[in-house]
Image: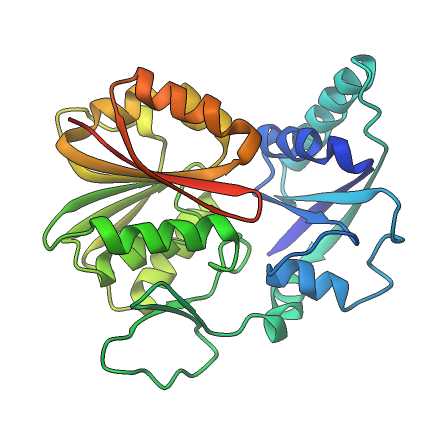
Length: 309
């Protein structure tokens, strides 16, 4: 499959706004290339290893988004340009935009040397499908190939979610993973004992990748991957646990939807937001009727465990 890589070179303080523009315009995922940032993300380390791809230290960073090279990419590109123009008019000079074609195989293969197995929490071990892991008896090995779905488990938000799951999963529970990405949280929750998980995402690449990774872990019978969002889930179905590792604004907008789809006594694990947005996110969830049980942090990222009374 061929993809269009949209790159915006922008001052660091505007990178979050540019990333939001790319996501909201229809890009399947975004990557921040910042030479001054410290990160454990293998995507960042892959770029860091190629000096030709790395901006100069102390200069602007690059935000890159990816969209399939098909009949719809020109509409996405037009929308990106229009949204960036609005930001410029509002006093946020977002910088230059460039476009090029990349193949999925060459892109996804290039960074594999940097994605190694790692332990997350007390039981879970995240292991690429192409690596080996000498598992201890207590280890639950989560095998993953994120492809273009942007979910290696190395990002702080994924790790925080996986650690919180060890505290709240019980056998047989029904789970909804809202914004599944590569399916890493869906797989983790089932390895920890959940009975079934429905994994939903607006991105068809994420749906396909979640299904493939579920099969790689022998969980295709317990994980259902489907296109969609939480608003389309019938409230009467009821879930024991809802996962939402997305970004701040959708969580805020969907707080009441999340609440109504949790069974009484059910839990939610939410993440994908930074410290400065944490109060807004938690206020929306509490306003919808949830109780905050715990908030955990790594670097500037936050995750929370909540409960429906």
